[in-house]
Length: 474
Image (cartoon, rainbow, N blue to C red; front, side, top):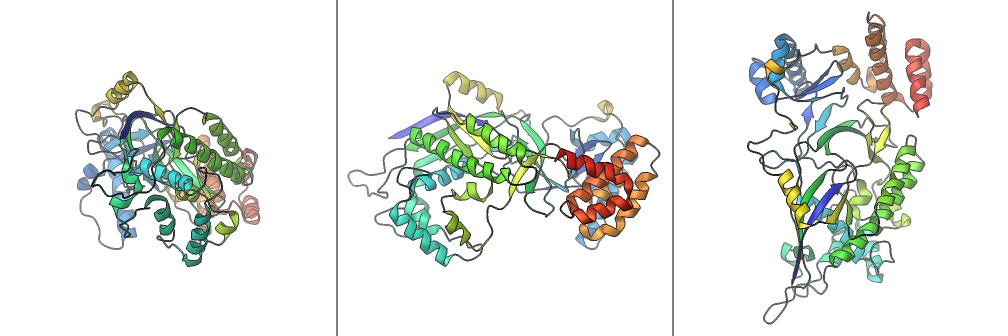
């Protein structure tokens, strides 16, 4: 017996499912005049002429220089190379695009949704009464054995736990796809509209490393049609061998488990954000999401990039067991920023979705909204490319900001030159923006070194107001 349903997937927070590629600054996108332009590199590169030989770093720098020259020289015609315009300065060195179907529509793969369901079911099937309840006695001994054999980055460490949850076959001992209980669950891709994506910047909290990254996300409120089929009975009967000794829970049970597990993960995140600088808004966001969980038949999951170790593993280890892991886990959190600057404040979490029952009429409306386009749509291109006739002049590249973004801790000797260049700027507004950009980069590099920042403020007093404004925002 199979229980097949049409469902509505809704993004509660920004969701990023990447395609594995990255758009590179100054080659695939440029920022100028307060705007970021995502470029059609396939059209641009043939117009650059002969490219130099040498190290990858030198080749990248020379390609970037040629692209800037070409865009500035061509003026308004440069818009023919622009796929998409983002009305802000993206300071990250790369942008991660979302995954798309062959015809260019962004999508959340069924494999991502099924992977999140697998983690939920792992946490539920290994406990007596679902996620958050007492673990089964046999599971605790298996966990102890797994921890004793775990080596750093051992990808097979939890295989025994997976086998206990999903491969309780009576005959085939060797793990194969045919002996996995999740063969009983089928999930379709959820295709979204080309206008449903946005670009946000992200960083990891509770680390001194430079982690600023821009990603293409499905924005909160985005909805998509999803189908899910659950076979309730194992493939048994006269003449049919039994692979499984257990069944998957019913949809209603999975929904209840998902809300219990979501509440567990959000409480853990709320406790984390309460104790880290800049986490106050996210602590409140966790509480807001917990209020959205409700008690209906919806399945609440967290999936995709930036969701963290706790989400991907089910987080059913005790604190003592987690401390025995050979790698440091759960010490940082990737968060969505309110803007794209290095000193932008945390705003939201990644990856939360709700999957709800849907009527036939609503399913038809969602299907029509995300129908296949007449022509393929390029990556990161929710609107058609602009034509030179309709475009405004492409603004000149401000190389100052490019050099500021490229600063690393070892480049402290370059700061004085950039500071003096900013001070010599004739336009007061541009001078203030340049000083603010330099101060933001220094805060990102040396934010936890109060002595270093004090010294920089004393030697370059025009930076001090920007340092103080950042302290007040925190």
